[in-house]
Amino acid sequence: MMTSLSARGSAFSGLGASAATVAAAAISATAFSVALFAVAGSPVFAADPFGGTLPGAEIGAALPAGYEPSGAVWHPRLQKLFVVSDGGIVSRMDLDGNGVVNWSVPGDLEGITVADPSGDLLYLGIEQPDGISEFDMATGQVRRTFDLTPWMQGPDNSGLEALTFVPDGANPEGGLFYAGLQNDGIIYVFDLPIRTSATSTVVRFVRTINPVPGRADISGLEWDRDNNVLYAIWDGADMVRKMTADGTFIAEWTLPGNDQEGIAISPCEMTIAEDVGKEVWRYDFPTTTADADGDGVANCGDACPGTAAGAPVDALGCPPAACSGNAQCDDGVVCSVDACVAQVCVHTGSDADHDGVFDCVDDCPAVANPAQTDFDADGMGDACETGAWLADADRSGRVDGHDLVWLARSFSMGCAEPGYDTEVDLDRDCVVDGADLVLMAAHFGASTVP
Image (cartoon, rainbow, N blue to C red; front, side):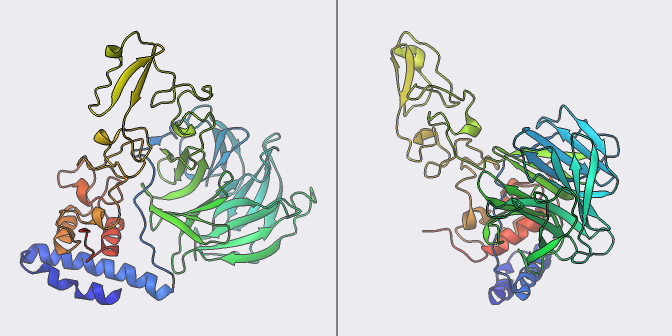
């Protein structure tokens, strides 16, 4: 890996002294980042561009003044989002930001989780001294606190920063608590007597998980109960990783925004709490392709859930409008056959990836992408722009120094700035930065020609 990086200087010939200097400095930063992963002994996985829909929706406006969101969790029974502030506030809200209810709880709150969705208890991650407090929503009071300092201690503002509960039916307590230490990026696993006792504060340390050796600054954890996977975020690296319960890598994406300190996963959304300006961002991020009513439109995109089995539906999963003749059914798609059958418009045609978009107008016909997102508006959908193809900004057929110079010209620029270029914003987060550089470096020298 390092050999190929050191050999890249030859790619700068003929690019001009100024551009080559900028590009060489940029690639040095990339080489350093890659070397850091290699020295740490961890497999190097190139992060994918963020898998959610951008831009997201900022839903934290109704939170109290001065609020600094530092943790989040989705409550599956209540269908509510819970957020905590490091100023000692627990908040409940709808996913649109409305219906805010606040409780005052002493301590530097950095995480929040739900162990038993059928009950009224929440568990709060406390920093300095590191611990877990059991909070009763019904009374608004802390019932007990579990001391984690024999195992978890970090410098000021680098202690417990993330908390989640991982269910386990074989465990007498219903599962285990995972707590992330910001100082070293390690997850500490604990067994707490939350079922077998209402008063005990005994803590049993189980093990540690080091998801990315050498990467500190872990800032949020969330267990996805529907899919049995663990999500972790790092606000220094701007990354979100999906893992198994033992920390085994599944996928990783760049994470939009900054100062991300909490993550909540609901069936169709990812919500990120940012510890700046009381910002809470909700992104469309379907975690399931389930289709409860069997109409061919996944739950997350179904505007009419519960449609009768076998009934014709439109792209939103709703019954189509009544018709009296074929002329009323023209959908404007040249490759579809439009007909009025039993007063219902029926559209048929080739759809190779079965995403509900006919091939002739599908911006990525071989990969299912019903949303048809195209961040750089080049006619090719984001679902098809991955790997080396995405990194080959100038479409020359190879990821090389010319692409690097292109990225360097827009480096540190955001969407609203004149020099910003969507072609080198590889993670599609509206800013060209180090994360894009790492993505390009991961494919440097690769050919995009079959």
